[in-house]
Length: 413
Image 1 (cartoon, rainbow, N blue to C red):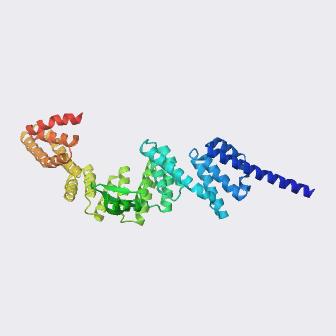
Image 2: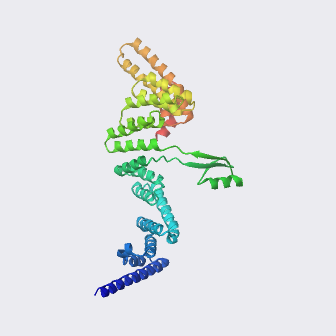
Image 3: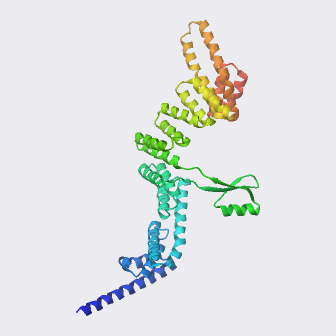
């Protein structure tokens, strides 16, 4: 009896192996014809046998399974290929691995390009997130795609997913630092190359010169900032502050972190804290005009006009063509007229006092004029023209005002 059972068992095993071989052949044939539906059906019929298959058949099974899914179901295809890699690694073989590797690379390229197109062209941030994250799952060493998924998720208002991805990036110590290979073409334009070899060939051939290897900036401070912003979006400002405080403890002199923390306080409408941090930043980078400009904004918003004027002048001293600093400086000076105008309204019956205040008002406008004028020269827009026209009208500069009036109407639309 035992012999009969053994014989029967062996018979079943032989039939199973035979069925596997046949279905694998059928799937292979269907894939070559492009009939993926038939290929899937053949593989599905032996799916339950996959784990008990002989290693050589198992490797082929997973290879064909990956090929049958292809771009239709990239995730399932990648899972099958990765299973194949495991099987052949244990076997010490690479027969199907060699065939699958380029197919997996093709899938990674397909999904990443799809993600980039969805993000840049379609502004479909939700589906871009899915594809960026899938690219990362397919190729975990390409952590840039996890960063892209985190940013895209935030754009799609999927804040929980964004937070999860940013936290993962922080956990693995992602910096995003990479080397960019550049060279200058014959027109003087800087070109970026995908790798050093391509760049060097262009330089050697004479189409480019001045090769340079540029390191991109670390994204670690940016990640901390974005975690904070996600917390703000989730209505958890205390966690946002805690995230940046934690980062500052490790790098108290990191200018980017200070600026990110300052930016966070703007989002939280805590201008007092913003001002404190900007002052701290100025100590670290005293020749940065943007920092003085921001201090000008903060103090101006708090009606600390003299302090604001001083900061804007410092920004201009460091950057003589700082157009926005000129415009804001002129605007802050003009804001001093508010108190004068109120006093004028309170002295309508006092001609002498009223005339004194009127003269004071003209002094303020004359003081603001050169800064507004310079801003308009650097870049004309509605604000610069409007302010200039108001000044000319008050100072009774009719000729200058008449020149600007049609321009003002045109800009106003």
